[in-house]
Amino acid sequence: MGTAAHRSIWWLASPLAAVLLLFFAVPLVLIGVVSFWSYTGYSITPAFELRNYAGIFDGCRVGGAGPCVVLSTYLSTLFFCVVVWAITLVLGFCIAYFLVFEVRSSRMRIGLGILCTIPFWTSNVIRMISWIPLLGRNGMVNLALMQLHLINHPLEWLLYSRFAVAVAMVHINTVFMIVPLINSMARISPSLIEAARDAGASWWQTLRNIIIPLCRGGIAIGSIFVITVVMGDYITVGLMGGEQIASVGKTIQTQIDALQFPIAAASAVLLLAFVMLMILALIRIVDIREEL
Amino acid sequence: MSGEKTLRGKIEFAAVTKSYGRVVAVDTISLKLPAATYCCLLGPSGCGKTSTLRMLAGHEDVSSGDILLDDVNVTDLAPAQRGTAMMFQNYALFPHLSVAENIAFSLKMQGIGRAERREAAEPLLQMVELAAMADRLPAQLSGGQQQRVALARALMTRPAALLLDEPLSALDPFLRLRVRGELKRLQKSLGISFVHVTHTQDEALALADIVVLMNDGRIEQQGTAHDVFSHPRTAFVARFIGGHNVIAQGDSEVAVRADKVTLSRAGTGTMAQHAATIRDIEYGGMAYHVRLSDAHGRDYSCILQEGAFAQLGPIDGETLAMSWAESDAQPLEPAAN
Image (cartoon, rainbow over all chains, first blue to last red; front, side, top):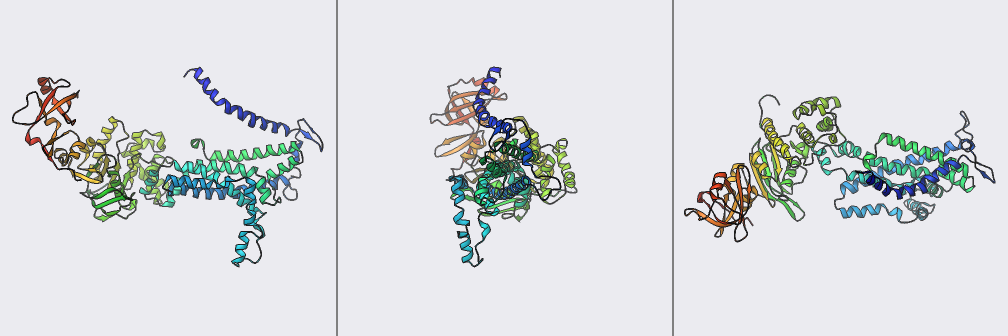
């Protein structure tokens, strides 16, 4: 292949490169730059100082009384991250397994696959609000439980609680797990499963020894989706948590609302670094290149 | 693999049917194979040969009828409990496991430890000459090597019957001939039955003790390779097994082997004959292969030895008399349906 041909191939990639540069790389760099600026209650000045980063860790001293704000916020967010990741992984795996290995007709499979995207048929806000009649104090779940005489008083923790946040996050994020898992599973030749059965593997042994190892890439990609979305979330935590639960995204949002852009930028850079570390750790365990 | 060898792999199909909804893939077939038989299931695609193999393997439910292996009714047994092992068409090697782990997979399923598995895999690794590649992944092997891993993995369970689904179709012609010979030798030395699905007639003729030729879910003819080739029962068999001309004689048809047909300009008074026009002459080294067709558009072929060819000197497009000895004409039964 000549150099001319090479050059024309690079040109084909240039529109995407330009879009990514303009709308992804440049803003990201700007956030990094602004995170070093200084600000007061009424002004923001270009500078290069680490005060914003120091400000984030305010009160974080070794031997200090209790965890500082940033640490407890990250712990709270990580809690959601772990819970939602674990639930979406199990749920997504089961649903993907069912769609790929149990549903015989491809029309049925496509139909059920579309059903999985129902959470996305409406806007995020409406989706959240619609949990209120279900989980609220006088919502369907509470009324049903009371009428069955299982409880005497409405359960207060159903809505505006960590539980509610986790439910809503699982609801939105499961499909991000399902899709890469379906992709991985669909590549597993049925004859591999028959070969395992031929060698005496039970259903469980086939799952453990063949299907799960061959889904590692799909699990990794789904995990990246879920982890990044949950780590940066502030809308779900706000609405479903009754604005009472701390999360990293919520912190950044509050700082932006207060027009404290430099410290918001510094918080964002910290979050970015944290999520990147999580993903790097994941990629170290699983090579996802073969899935792409 | 010690002491005196008992022959294993006596297989019996008793009125076995497989239907998918209304479609009947295998229609009440009955078949008896003695122990240590090399059997080829031969037929065009969609004839039911693969379904038959998969029912024997236990990867397909039997709709009705019974399958016996070494006098045990295995119809409802799980694949691993039958004493069969399957070698899949695409080999179905586990891509994330090493060669040794692939071969010893069945032991892993029995809960046998890694070191012991490795030890047990060693003789099989040596048998298929892959001992040096024990730790490679399947993707790092050639097609032929992958096939040997699949073979070793299937033999790990010490089956009474090894079931091979088109084992040679993915190999290049040179390797195909070599593996063909190896399979036959292996079957004889193990003293077990091989059931080999193929759509290639020369493969079946070369390998099989018993050829089972299937068509449309039924067994069209079964017997030794020699028997099926020299006495085709129906026109379908004669055409599929190759090397035969199906010639209409009044209401019935006969099969005449291509090498038993002689061509002449005048015709030979004492022999049966049929006029046909030469369409194509092909030199095949050992002999000339002449293709002809008659006024009804039916095709024939004739193999002429070099001497006979030189004497006749046929030309493309020339109309000649095909003649054959009455004793070489194999009467054919009309098609079953």
